[in-house]
View (cartoon, rainbow, N blue to C red):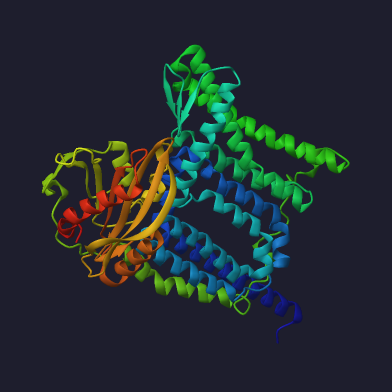
Length: 535
């Protein structure tokens, strides 16, 4: 007959074995998750985080781990039972993985990983336990880059804003300066505010730092929100001030002030100035609320002594069944998920753009070339860029034709929309509409539909038509183009496609309708050739 103490010891040992197995399953499931999402995570680590805008990414997981560490002593009491919402969210995360894999968007897969991690923790620790460390999970969002279309749009807008404010700073020093788009003309020399000077290399790290301070700062919610949101104007103003100072120093001491160590050192000083302003703002808020003690006392920086162990969690198979379901879900779907990127694609036969005629009818073309840096960014398979003129029409403007072909739009190598790229160089998009080109039938039988844009830079204006050729489809919407990549990759093992863009100048004091007719005539002459190059 078993005595009561022996039975209690046996029961306790059984509970500990059950808890240990649950922990082991959680660790194995997390490892499996890392393996499934490894390609997108490796790309983030080895490519995205090497860019200055995201170089703070290496610190984000460490800070997130610190935030979890602060809550460890409270976690066993909150983590009583797994939630069935966990497997549901994990399933949504795996669907996001498929969508990102098949539509060639790494960012979707990276966000899918965070969603999967949240689902796994929810399956194990339940709603209350996961909520306890929720801020640490939210903070991980700052390690993931913006999608390219958002990044390029934001960068181009910040370049223009920083240029305008920077020129205002230069003029405060009685220096004659002229601004054309994002080009600052000092007379003897010109400075272009390029993508690297947009301020994003300060904005993203400062926003992550501001979010952390806002969380650690023990104050009313409106003060925390103000601290976080103020990182945006602080960055823009400080970056503009930096551009202005560079312009002043160049005017005084030459172009060497904008090169090498001095340029990088100025950038470091500006970022530290942004951090200083953020702390000054926190000091002002502390003074306004007249809270006793110092501001540092309101920062939750304590490093508690851990008094709990894995045995203190009341894990058992009855309470953690959602984790078991989540683990089975990972195990069952993993072989199919991992095979998605290995599927062989079947792009159609096509002519290379090297065979595209530069003499066609009354048109004569002169081919150009893209810079190596641009090609490295676009990662296209084939392209042509050429200026076409009609010698018989002396007053007609040249037409610039650009076609980019992607044999496979895998992650990191997909079509870049002109909507993101056009604002570079100081151009602004005044008008963007969808338009059916008269008297041209698309290869699919419908009318040829294009995006019609009017772009301006100071007194210059251009008319732009562009569209996407997506495996027999005439597409004008960037998001719909991504969806069709996903659909065709999944159903037909094809992700090839092309961008077609034509541009002509719009001279001053001329009717925009004349430029429309000019582009339409060009397309009527050349469109019949396109299906052979973008089938």
